[in-house]
Image (cartoon, rainbow, N blue to C red; front, side, top):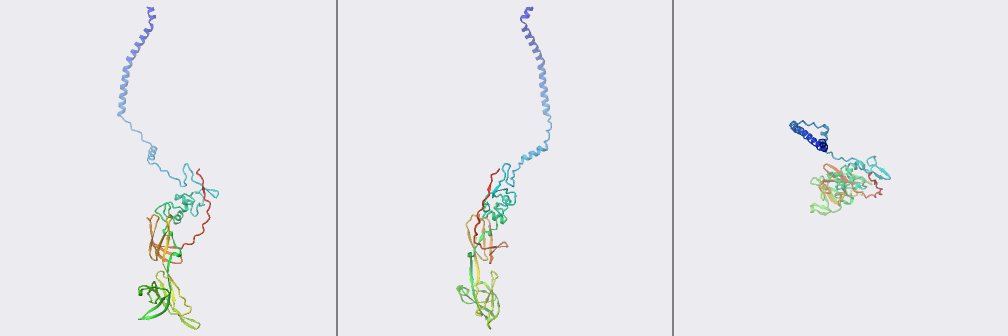
Length: 358
């Protein structure tokens, strides 16, 4: 018996272990099944009862609103960015920051005005530029107080008008005051032109016959002249009395008055010419456009247009004077002065050099 156990002891131990394992399994399996049922019941119970979610914080709500409305990048007034500084200029060997100091790069325009209007102040020809092709330079826009980058703003178009003395058309009239006579109780004054003028009584033919004019009437052939007065005058020269009576004519267009002394009344008699300016040929030129010649008669209206023709201003030629030509628009008057000879251009100055951004 002892020998039998000795020879088969490992089989005996294996059998005992197997029986022990089977007994343990018989005890654990029911417990595991009960645990699964308990977990399932708990899951169903927690699903049926939903706990309320915690409210979002104020910071989270504010952040969400910011994300919904992104803020656009705003350029700095000085032209700098987070990565590149604004340009500096080197002028006459000196480093210049256009945003600081009072020294203008292109007098008389302040640097700030150029920057505020988004103009390239590193361009040495910026004053002569026309950014929006409106027909005016940057300098002209500055002087007029308009925005060179606004296509709907224009300096007054009449500033582009010029003329010279040769552009004015004049007519000259010279009359001799001969005498006066009574005609059925009405005094007529005898005027004889010293050069041929139209005669309405003869089909406006040019001739030099005497014209008889009463006070308050205009001179035939020169309808802009009206007789407005007569004054008897005597003058003694070398003990001899002369008739130097005066006839006053008024230019109805200008209001000027001209006095004619009676001819043959004195050896000092000298006729004087009366000039009538009839029209002028203006020269109108916008930047980037050919010159236009606009001939205008006194009292007539004329139009000036922008470079693209969409903007128009209407003026009226009101009068001529020694100071210039008077034109009007919407109740305002402007004097166009004759152009002066071109001045000698100033020597070119060294342009400022732009330093590379740093």
